[in-house]
Amino acid sequence: MVGDDRSNVDENANEIKPVSVSRLRAIRKLLSSPDMG
Image (cartoon, rainbow, N blue to C red; front, side, top):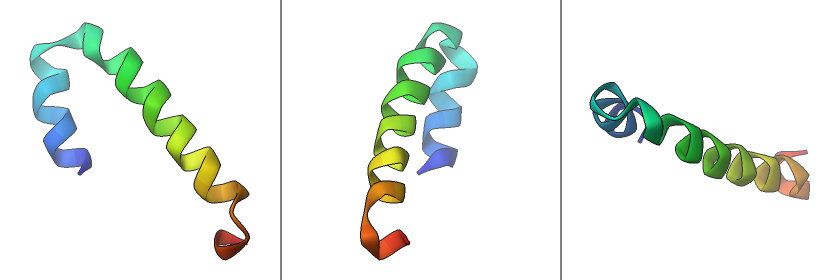
C-alpha cells in the first residue's frame, strides 16, 4: 500500500500531508486496538 501512495506523492507533494494524516489516524486506531497490544 505504501508503494502505491509514494507514486502519487512523488508527483503531488501536497498530497503527502492529507495522506500522512489519514494514515496516522488509521495507525493510531490499530495501536489502540487490543489486538495490536
